Length: 314
Image (tube, rainbow, N blue to C red; front, side):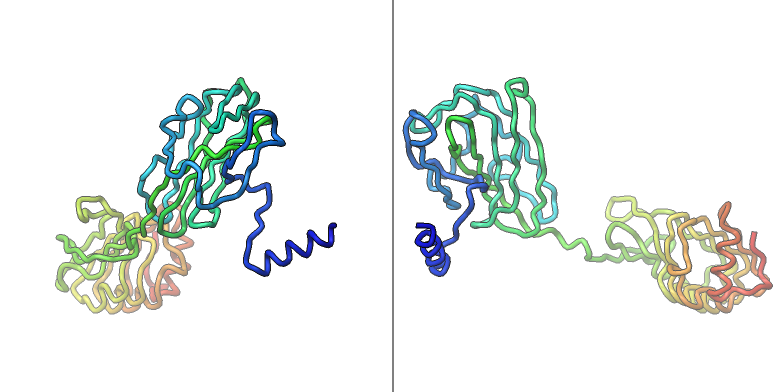
């Protein structure tokens, strides 16, 4: 008999029929009576033939689906809260007249097509009725997702309360950049931060790179100075680098021969984030004011980026 069963399963697999194990809980109730679990038929149907599109409005006395709501819209990568509150523990009556004297398990299944993307299962006792059970799911692709609620109890082996749908759309392109001009210069805005691309003009003698700027109605931190940003500005004498600057591009201050005073407010600069020859060609007697506790580290780094031992660090 076992050989015959094994051969039959093998033939089904070869024919393209997928055998889903009983541990998968997105089942459909297909019939039965109230005489016990042996007379109830449960089968896997990813298309949700029974009670298709039921939005649980008639089941609120049994449990409440707090989220997600039917027809909600999300974007790829957005965490979706899954939340269910049971209102009963015993004496459930299911479609077909099937009852359960001990209702102690719900499974919320998230499907895309026939593929299960998330199963949110919880077991509870009578003392847990009214408690809200939560989990979360983050979709990685756009499309229609089906939410299935399945119940298991000790008497009734299972019943599908129904299905509803949510939509997931492609996320906006967060890598897209924009360019804005301010009183200080031109900036590139990308991923919620700003890079100073060029100063307002090439004849400035003093420049303070701000901590933040206003862009599209939002306050954006200035985190970078582009390569060649101040290259060849031979009238520039004084520069203040804002506290949010994390990187300075290659040759950013190259050839600024009159640059004698540099105040660095940022504590976020490293050897890897300062480009080659960033300070080559500035005044040999320049004074560099470093943040508290950063003098030794910054001196070591900046001497490799074009500064000279004749310069004073403090």
